[in-house]
Image (tube, rainbow, N blue to C red; front, side, top):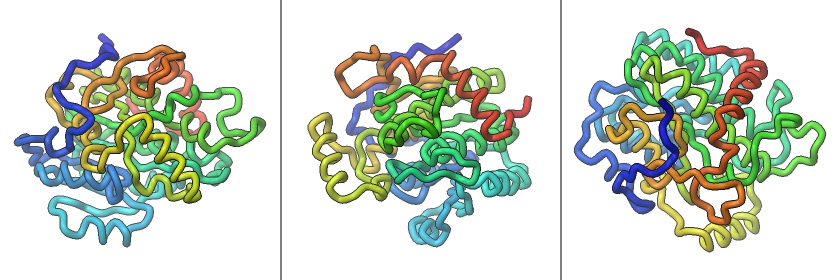
Length: 317
């Protein structure tokens, strides 16, 4: 049975914080990995999960920065990982699997937004390579530990940016069409939502459920590639649509998807404001909800097949 893409409703709102979502729930004994869990929304996700007793592994491309951000937190382990480097992904996953621990929560939080047209070592466009393919490979490598947990959840950070575009399967890496950094970002966020949909379809038989998340408009280091004038324009545009969230509010939906009993036996849905989002039409003029191309199971399967081919990685049975 597929989960209906409509609000439960959960009883939460856009102003709910990650700690309010957790409440008095304890996560002692749970093991979590939060990519990018040392800045912005990821840092608050780490803080909330670790405060509830979970052991949180935070893999970082810049370990020194992660050490400084996480130094005062209990139950946090720091690791190294570069999602744009396949060998780094494999090495990190191998180290975790060698520990023999189950993995109860995987939050695929790290990402890039609107850098210049750069490519990874395989020639793949950087948004799709980092935001989607890096996490696809990471999740595949950690699959044995997720299955071992018997009740794991995988949370992928999507965005309202998915509303900009579907996947262009004819030229996903901008080899022929002109590069547009916002289109590239939006395509990768659609990929994050479709990945959760396809992963959940495969994982539910093993009690592994997957969700995608729009954290809300949150001003974080994600905008570091943008010139100042574009940041100011983005702030003005977002302010006209909805109020900005702080990072604690931005982390609420990730944390809700990672641990809420309200989502027991559910999965494969796009969530926002600590609830399942509305399914909206392609021409819906608003800025909430999830567009058809980000919830299409056929598109999700097509992306899955392409992702296996691009990475050379398959999920083990």
